[in-house]
Length: 212
Image (cartoon, rainbow, N blue to C red; front, side, top):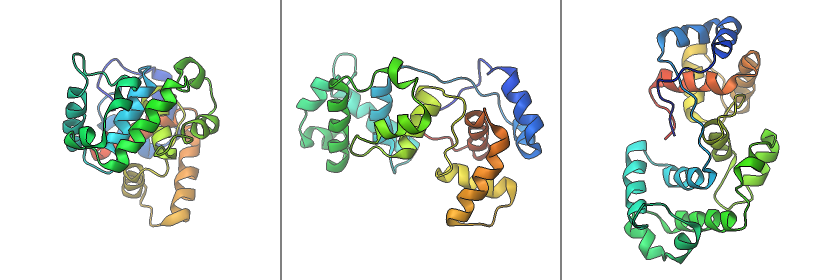
């Protein structure tokens, strides 16, 4: 799940961020334009997020292609079809037993009608996170990535993301660690409201390490 170079996001967001934060303004000037990235398939986005956990973007892409190959002819892992696969089927595609359980939990959640885009896109951030983290294997970070990319919600700040932490340490000269670091990052991000998502995407881009 990554941003591409066009079309451009609305100018008011860029104007607000460049006026609110000189450090961020420099990153925006030096960076590439970032596009909106909304798509409506939350189920598919969740599956891909689980596949991508704790591995490189390149490895995740290779495993995802193998997963798609398990679902001919179009490669779409319909929930009912996914639930029929054994651990051995999924292991052959590079999915661990633990992740196989998570994928099944997502498929079951989808079968129950719990991943309706129209409903979930209207939830406040905390409500959205509470809803998704009912699924085994889905944590707050995953919920935030879906808000930022699958829903393209404008004001999400994933302070727990290692890429965001590394970028802010580098560009803002932060020496804090642990809770003190998260507190300082949240304070620095406050002026970015209501466009913290776009600010975060520029921070990722500054590392050339956007989330997969």
